[in-house]
Image (cartoon, rainbow, N blue to C red):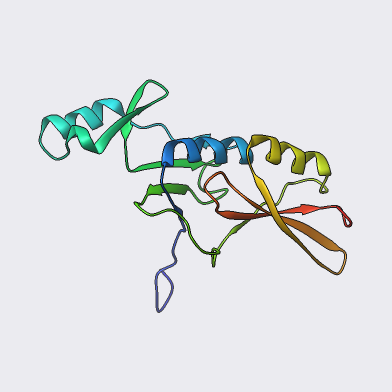
Amino acid sequence: MTDSHPVYAVQVVVDCTDPHPLADWWAEALGWQVEPQDEEFIRSMVDQGFATDDDTTHHHDRLVWASGAAINHPEGTDRAPRILFVQVPEAKTVKNRVHLDLRPGVDPTTAELDRLLSLGATRIGQGSQGPHAWVVLTDPEGNELCLPVPPGT
């Protein structure tokens, strides 16, 4: 805590219609890992009446909470914020006011763009400022992200 206010850690939350496949997609895209969910704890919450079977689903043959999935940087949340994918009933309909800028630790290449497109990203735009260029992509549910690319790509 500072003199006048607390210092916050940040978690990024992404609304989506199907959190588990989207978490898988983002984990693959970023080279991160999907946060495991504790099946015993989930069963215990259902058995004790704190949740119902409708609050759960199966993903990759494991019992998980239906409403959310998270991913983490492989070096932990001290390296990057946790990203939580939360189920909402409505589909995305307008441009995001916040998006993720991917910043690979190497010079931008078209190979990374091709990799993301092969995973299911969609290219929707491009931009540049001075010597920096980027493409605007969407994930499989239409959430925007930007990727640096060599100028003229």
